[in-house]
Image (tube, rainbow, N blue to C red; front, top):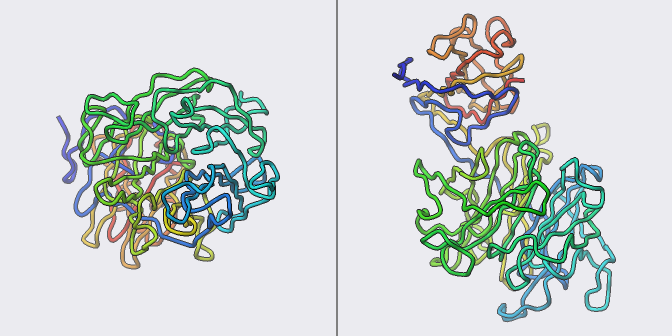
Length: 479
């Protein structure tokens, strides 16, 4: 039977072995109970500056499907790859063929378009065109961190649509000079007509692909009818892939799968990636498409521990807001990439930056705007001034101290207790011994009267009780 502990109903489950992992409070995965005013809260990123305008002759008002990453192989330079395309003055017909373009940055904020001299456009190679040909509609690269990947394929990409014959694979030694890996498509089961992506999953030692398809009521797909949705599959060698499976979604406690879609939810892109600070967690920033509301689009947040079942917030992560350039068909897409950048406020910790488009289909050029949030900052457990509590599931950790990513008001505070599985505190780690912390930091070392050292409890089954008032806690980690 569950054991009641100070108002909590304690479930009897096997402990989670988290070791040194950072655990984010994105969902209820490690939470056993919330009490008082404590609840999960979605935090919307802050809009910042326009970082890129697609105003070159080979770009235009339908540029899109951007990929952003920080390249450790080239001095930690930030790289962006995107489709260059546009329409004529009527906004109804393509002005030129789609090409794949490149931009780079030293800080993720200030971007340039270097002359690559690789492909000719209107008789000149003075442009930033990275790839021109098959797959240019949705060419999506990634830095392959598989240690067995040969130097000639240190970077890989996928691109292609059904009219091309499927999704094709590409490789590059430097991220600039590309060639096809094979003549035949790497995948044919899917619709592919948006941004499909692949990455190397270092923890599960496999490639993971997330692709676009249309799902019918019976769970089948493969044509342009039904609901826009996402499939995933895996590969050990980037050649042989498992059969694609529809993602499953937990939305507000209800599970939706291949034949039970959540109502009226078209997901146009997926933007799934392993979160760098906690790579066992997958984050996704899919685009919700509203075909019956003038084809408006906006970005959502979802997270997963297995890459197949995602907890999805139906509240928009980045709504159009009061920006007219985002209240338009296929504007407000979140692009693939989440990178650390310097803080907007001098002296503050680093931030996370992601990027979204605006002004799509309008006369002129698409723009890319940067958005920022704190480290681990998409979801928190939040309690009002009246107070609340969080209790974790049983955990087994490794480490010498407990760190919290937390923020309080000037009058708010956070206290922490480490308990036995039955809810009784370990001696010296009870709430009455806890420091009453107030402040704002992603790396607060929890302190009790005897200090911060928790190594005596490492390897044992514990629960962490966090009592907070006018405060947020985003993540915990034993380090």
